[in-house]
Amino acid sequence: MPRLLHYSDIENVFDDPERAGCLAGCVTALDDERTLVVGTGDNTSPGVLSLVERGGQVLDFYDAVDADLETFGNHDFDYGASRTRELVAASRPTWVSSNVRDENGDQFAAADGAVPWATREIDGVTLGFFGVTDPATGSINPEAVELTFDDPYAAADDATTALREEGADVVVALSHLGSGDDELASRCDVDLVLGGHVHAERDDVVDGVPIVRPGANGHVVWEVRIEVERIETVRHRTSEYRPVESLVTALNGRVDAAGLDDILCRIDRPMDRSEETVAAGECRVGNAIADAYRWATGADVGLQNSGGIRSGPPIGPDITHADLVSLVPFEEHLVVAEVTGTELLAVFNAARGTKMGFGEPEWWHAHVSGARIVWDDERDEVVEATVGGDPIDPERLYTLATSDYVLHSTQEFPAATQAHRAGEFGIQHEELARYARDVGFDAAVEGRIERRTTTPAED
Image (tube, rainbow, N blue to C red; front, side):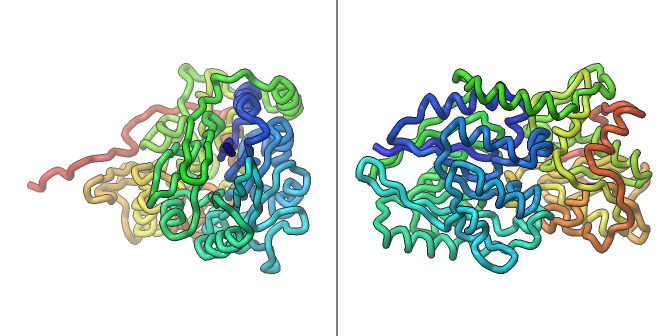
């Protein structure tokens, strides 16, 4: 019986070598000659070690788990297309990608070994694999703007047709579409979708097609047992497995070489930065980051998107530069945008992720400084908003400090664009480090964001 071992979005797992070792230990303990080890994107980046190694730390992992197949996530282009090509050429797995095209419109990284689809035969069963990546990647990753992303469903149709013609008994989609997995399952001739992009776990069936997603940061590996007429899924918690010591040693060596362990400040209570906290509404770590942005720029409002805060263990009481890099491990500049009050309200009204393909509908996406927002869940909109204690004036110009990503992306806060750009400052984590040294790095939850389930009746 063929089996697949599926991980995805392991991102900053490498910043905790022991946890990365347990992830590898889980895979190697379950692997055998009838098993394929597959990833579905965002496994090279982001993270502190990833930033230092430009994604190269994943090569140690791929070797440790004897990885077989991989596809591209949006973060796999964080260091530019040229670096992604280098990683494809140097890494053990075969990269399958059906809808990513290079600067010339050709299949991306074909010269480096990437293929649109592939087959593998195990126990007399021919398995066909193809990969699809979120077509919004060029919008959510500035380093991917020169690439193009074909319609993933049309690409999937082409791939499945080719794989069936090549004799595939079971067709597996390696998907980094996030919420698009349902459409992939219902529209295309696939037997199994291994998903990524959204960081919430999933084990579901849509129109008879199993969809499996392991969540983020290497906590879970899915074992998928395949028979032509039946597919069974088994969840494995990686912390229950013995770590691969050779990988732990290799990653510790890379971490030590990074030299980011100087203590910048201390706080009384560690700050939680789990996805459950950051995406639920106002939180200490979101407030601290937004405060730092406003401090560094003198802007009226600081704004940090929730998805840009990477989850991990609580930070503190000692705060190091590595901690702050791990919060926002991107080489994005801090920028200031000049927006009208009407535009600022539109930014605030995009604070819930109901239409975003990489988050859950109930997720909260904005952390602010210098402002207060009252959100009505039933109306799904801002019902009150102030800056500096005063109601927002629709005609007034306000300055907004945020990451360059926010101005680039059309997916999160589309009312703030590059056309609003009015100033550029240092790299995000460097500005956070400066703030931590000079001011400290802590904040309280103080009512900057209030979420109501009902709107009070008018008098």
